[in-house]
Image (cartoon, rainbow, N blue to C red; front, side, top):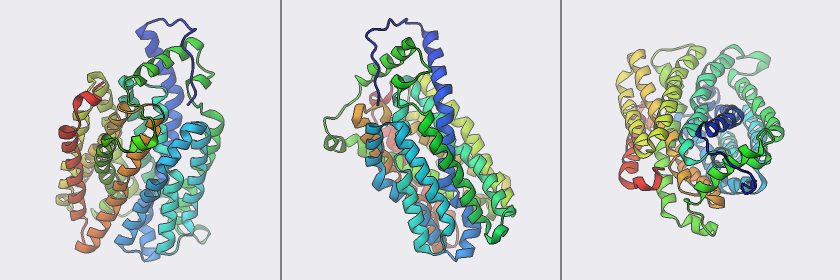
Amino acid sequence: MDAVSTASVPIEDNKEKENSIYRKVTIRVLPFLMLCYIVGYLDRVNVGFAKLQMQTDLSFSSTVYGFGAGLFFIGYFFFEVPSNIILYKVGARRWIARIMVTWGIISGATLFVHTANEFYAARFFLGAAEAGFYPGILLYLTFWFPSARRSRIIALFMAAIPISMMIGGPLSGMIMEYFNGAGGLPGWQWMFLCEAVPAVILGGVVFFRLEDGIASATWLTEEEKAILARNVAEEEKTKVVHPSLLSVFKDWRLLLMGVIYISCTMSQTGLGMWVPTLVSKVGVKSLFAVGLVSALPYFVATVCMWFVGVHADNRRERRWHFAIPAFVGAFGLYVIPFTADSLPLAGLAITLGAVGAVTASAMFWSLPTALFGGASAAAALALVNSVGNLGGFGGPFVVGWLADLTQSTNAGMYALASVLLAGGLLVIFAVPAKLVNK
């Protein structure tokens, strides 16, 4: 992280001027980061659409598919903490560029998969390549925005998830349907190839465009840099900065945050990976139509996430802004099995599940980012994300395993709902309000 001195620059305490500076930073930084995450998240979850052809072509069971889809998060788990620490040391520009180029190459190479073991390897190494990107961006945002402004910023950034589903659903369905058989390749192989290219290109753009922090931002005046740096520095004084990595790992709050985040990732990823299957089972046959219908819940989730994030910042309240969406999402997931005969009702239930899981995930990150500072924040955020992302492995795998066991996705939806409900209750009863309401 680069640093800027505030000692020699007079600072005018004008709230409107400060708001103007943060708008300037938001417009400059956030859309580009969102674009990167949209591309990255699409490469992570497009396997959910590939399943509609890939599973038949390669004779994979639902258990094999769910296990392979979830292995992404095991690779993520092992490489997350070292990746984020490297980012803190070498700077966001170099490391995020490296992450994007390597994940693009590996995602594209998934088109060569023919066996279950090759599928497992591709998903594991894709997770290893992408490890550190998401918590790295969260850490990067703390370099610019204090806690009082961060919920809406994180919500905006995480809107990339539902936006990627909105874009990726129709795009993946269109590629798989209309490119199927072109050049002798099935549609799912074309999809992996076409959707990997943007990641490699954007990785190069990141290297030349992204600043490491406030001090290297040539588009800011010295006074603007001083105001931003002062606000970040003042907040850092209230955070815990551990003297060593070992002391970070001993902090009980890390385990608590990791367990809570498991409830988000398990429900969000478990649902996201299986939405195309759920939609096709209701009677939607065209792959392009499946993509369009699958996108609608995430459009609603994008809007809801933004309003909840703004409300959380305005109220300076974090716990209930996590818990209520979690409860709504759990309700939607519980209801999905009862809507198998009606596309409108199934769409409503899936939408409630997606809105709740996605919004809770966005609100979650206002909790740990308010607790840790300095280099310890890099390790803490990465550790929370890596532990929590075990749920990203568990969600798809549990739904797939239960689908093979019961010949239905119903039990899997009940499992995801129960986990998300438990996460909401845990935040209310185990996270003291004074720790996070800033």
